[in-house]
Image (cartoon, rainbow, N blue to C red; front, top):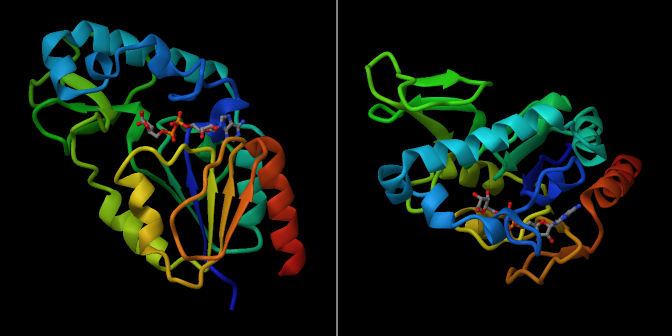
Length: 229
Ligand code: APR
């Protein structure tokens, strides 16, 4: 039986597409006050600043393309059942043809009612104050902000619990609950961690750290897994 491959991705997988990561030296959180632009309090205090921050991110997403790492996942899914769990709010996995993608932290090209989290809409342009949902409430980015619950985490934990191979790509593993997903892995499941700055992870699973960029490290690992199949 083919192993289920579950891939947890973070900002580093999109770095070579031209999207800034958060915590690297030139990362987004160097130049932006994280609580001002990505928290419910920030949204209450200065919604225009928040909208401007995500409008910039959305405009940038129109300018970039998936890279070799996203495409490697498309290749892998031709040989194995593959599930992607991403912390990223970009749509580069989908645009590369990755099929099963769960967004833990929301999606930049979606917005939702500020009052009813079920009222979600596709949105590719700038979002302004005065843009309203069907319920008359202001629309907000469909993003999980700091201090907010992560509704998809239960589904993600279930998927991780069924992983036969687990691959982590381009995440500092600094943000919970996403970083805690490794604790749902079956104890024998091998883990590969691709990140130029990967730090050891405190798990007892067999762990292979690959300190390379996603665009080179992931295609190599994919070729190896396909060859061993
Ligand atoms: N290839 C692979 N990894 C890379 C590359 C690259 N080309 N460039 C940078 N990285 C790695 C960095 O070494 C770092 O470990 O990507 C990681 C990025 O870490 P963070 O900036 O912390 O991003 P991430 O882990 O995705 O952050 C998690 O934090 O602010 C929130 O909600 C936001 O989803 C995000 C969450």
